[in-house]
Image (cartoon, rainbow, N blue to C red; front, top):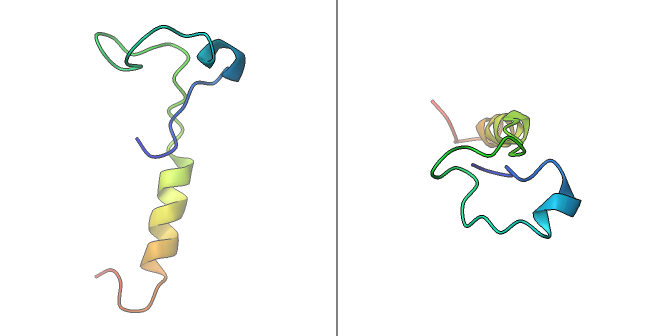
Length: 51
């Protein structure tokens, strides 16, 4: 869940939910995995990291 956050910061400030994923996933939870994939690609480019 790296860098996943509410898609509307103004709503996030007043949100009273304890979890964005339980008991059901919030419709405002941003689930873009691009930041995670970018981090993995950068790590793989480091000499000695990866397979």
